Image (cartoon, rainbow, N blue to C red; front, side, top):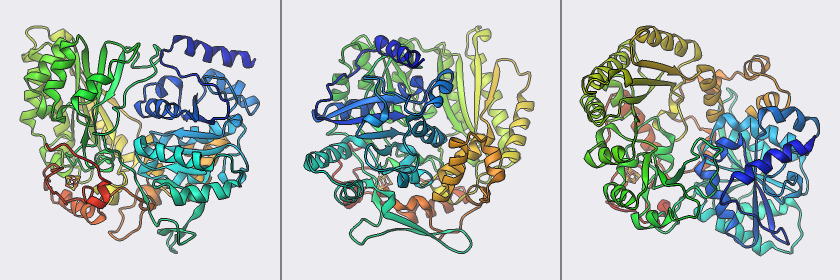
Length: 592
Ligand code: SF4
């Protein structure tokens, strides 16, 4: 029966270009694990980057492994050890290191299940010998604490300069046999950005709130620095393995910038990846010359249109015969260059993100966007024949009232009106799609002190909007599931005590709702409580360079509906602290 599993992987390999096959020899072997299905993993630029970055080291072999396809799960679960790497189809126990790349908190349970499928004891304390189990990825440098009991160590931060130091460390230890505890202690002491959770212990107050997470030895760092890369020095991060079996099968994804200086107060990526950094256009143009790269380039960043050389970049790609797509566009930066690029690239749909219905609430979240700018973007797009507009909104934001929900409905109607009036009679082709998601207060943002709105309230709000827009022609509304947003809030705000719940869901196949009901822990304690200013957060074991006082001040400004202007990187700005020389780590920044 295992041949069926191998056959599926063989088919994936046959359809791919850019796969790396290496002899194992005496190399350090890494199973790079994605805690979700192949199609999702292969669409993830971070996962693709780490795969090619590890394989660039001569001393390392890196192979991929994915969470099984649903129909394969019974077969894999029958006998531990059937979870295989894609390239050489070896079981994970044959590798020196299993390294998970984790972009989303809701995949934590898949990570634990994958260890079970691999026949590797789930908890770090139960393991001995090979392989070591590690993880990295943005979910873990937002807040690693809920899953640290499963991991021997974590890569905290951006991989461009963290991975070379890790591989150097391996080189220095080569030939030395030692206990895993000795390797982990050395690693924690010698590589900045490596977090070994077993060397740190949390302490709690009587009321259950966190007192702190403390190192067990004075020569360990008190906080783990979130590593940041100098993008002006680094190679751009782009798709390296192409396959028709992903969502982005005909697109080469290419990261053009990291971070965002706009300061939207709900956005963890916007704060964690500060200061905003850009790849230079010449390196970006060179990067798409890879063999087998599709003609279409998907430009990726938090705000693609904010790149200081975006107009030149678009013209150069178009002149070379490429077509372009954008991961995100701000309504206030759609101009003639962007429009002609969209037209030349035959775009029929564009997404814009007002995020909140009213200008008042957009001031609260610091999404400095007026209704006029949103309507003007809709007009310009429709005049170019782009009649499918997707609008992203959130519900459950701090200070939200019924008036703000009414304005979501009015904004949708207004955009519909603008698109239809500018559509030159093609009204039947116009579609306005609202994607409405529940707000989750994320670590390291000004809203880290705010509570989650609650499943019942979010469901009521969603129902109200649904009813208000029902039967409006050309308008569709999609909602996320508030109960999954609750789980996301729990996993992104919790601490090590959550591992008993994660065990129940991943190792005993219990549904989240049942596991939470049966648990002595009260998940509302982490999810629904507004925190006091001084309360310690589990994620503060990490240091991303942003001052806590700055985030608190921003929370206060949010509640007073005050806007904060965008970042001023390279202009001696010290507002949030991320550009302070000791934090910026020698990073060069292009002036905006
Ligand atoms: S210090 Fe200033 S420019 Fe640098 S990231 Fe913070 S706010 Fe932006």
